[in-house]
Amino acid sequence: MEPHPPIPSDSAYVAPHTALGLIGSGMRVFVHTGVATPRLLVDALADRAEGLDHLEVTHLHTEGPAPYVRPSLRDRVHVRALFVGANMRGAVADGQADYVPVFLSEIPRMFRQRTLPLDAALLQVSPPDQHGWCTLGVSVDVSRAAADSAPILIGQVNPRMPRTHGDGHVHVSRFAALVACDDELISPPRPKLDAVRIEIGRHAAGLVGDGACLQLGIGAVPDAVLAQLGDRRGLGIHTETFSDGVRELVEAGVVTGEHKAIDRGDVVTGFVMGSRLLYDFVDDNPAVRLLDVAYVNDPNVIARNPNVVAINSAIEVDITGQVCADSIGTRQYSGVGGQMDFMRGAALSDGGRPVIALPSTTGSGASRIVSQLQPGSSVTTTRSHVHFVVTEHGVAELHGRSLRERAEALIAIAAPEHRERLAADARARFGR
Image (cartoon, rainbow, N blue to C red):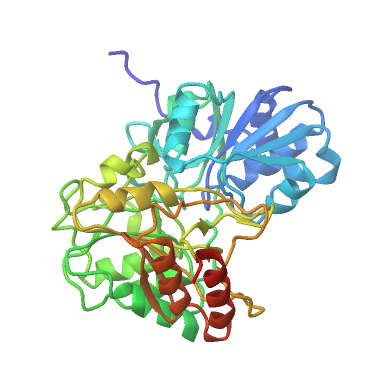
């Protein structure tokens, strides 16, 4: 085996605009995910794009501004969004970005098999250790596959990026250019829990027994569920992402992973987002493994653990159980992500429970349990895959029930002021 080149000295680091000189017209460039978004490189990419043509940028959600969709670049840069975050919704709406509907678990294979070939990847990494190995830090997700398949890697090396265990190791010799950085990672504000979310959390937590293996996302509803689990024992975590609520349960001894059939004792995830306390928690923590989502989100892998409880959110659910979680009518709001991966994996797990949890109404008071999804809405999760739906009014168990029985169960957990209308629509649809 050839020895790795020596670890670079400080003189090997270059300015961001120098590093981005490696990017040319017609390239497809991947940007690292979430709070790992390399902001210095992103800014330099946007400036570089002013002199290029037909540049394509692709990524999942990213945090912070996305200057490559500024108006002056409209005819030079196009974004292929694999998930639509807040900084991409306007660009998707006006055509400067296109959304690709795809299960999160399938994206790594698209990169590796060159269904979606990459020319370069912009990554934010932890500093190289004494052997020259950096890590992808808090976001391994699809970024592992991007690092494997893009010929050109440009690294933003940040000592504030946690050094994480799992699949995220990249040797410094793999980078065509390195940029030094000492910026704090973004810490999204922790959502405040209102009475509605607390009630949703209480009902959803009732579906979680001792020894369950959890998948939850990030946001008010997952936080509300986790806040109700302090008296459980032996919980496990196998999830595409987590935040501070999981950290707190690990530190309280509630999450031990002792009942998991695979990765026993380990917290398994694809990426994390949260406070500096969370980033310090995952730093050099061998009990937390950040892995490629081709593994984390594989339904067959998920199903190997018993008692998987997967709790996901939705924008609206119709009275047959169809779930729209990524669009508002025809307007793309987010993305497919890993919801279906985990809903199916939990359903196949021995004792597993796939759960959709959402408030019964929107902020304006409209019902989120609806007779029909809005015209143009996507069906993120089919009615065949949904077993439980939770609102602040209770739990509807749908698995094994007919369409009429599903409607009755869902109307019972809708907001009281909307139940009469929903019931009338159900009678008209199902004949009685």
